Amino acid sequence: MRTLILLLSLFLAATATTAGENRIFLKDRPGKNQVVAQCAMCHSLDYITAHAAILDRAGWEKTVGKMIDSMGAPINDADKQVIIDYLAQNYGK
Image 1: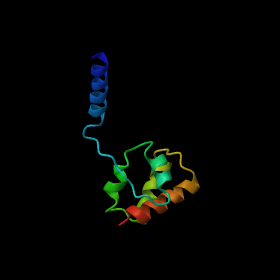
Image 2: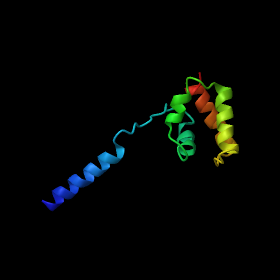
Image 3: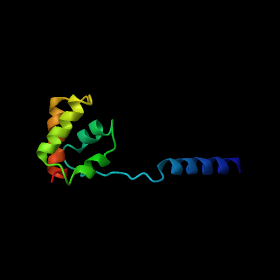
Image 4: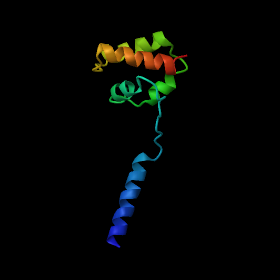
């Protein structure tokens, strides 16, 4: 009985921590791994999908540049270009 109560408690705790949270699934294309690794360390990936309709390539370049220059995101130049290419090709207007 104790085991059942413990398992039920753990299940309810896990369910409560994810209740109301939406999982964001980005397009599985080259560059996705860099985007997930670099962007999700600071903010939710829904930022990407929410801005897809308004940002073109220049907008993504400016946004990624701001994340690096103003916010201090530790993204090297090679990953920066991969991230911009991925965002522009898959989430650009």
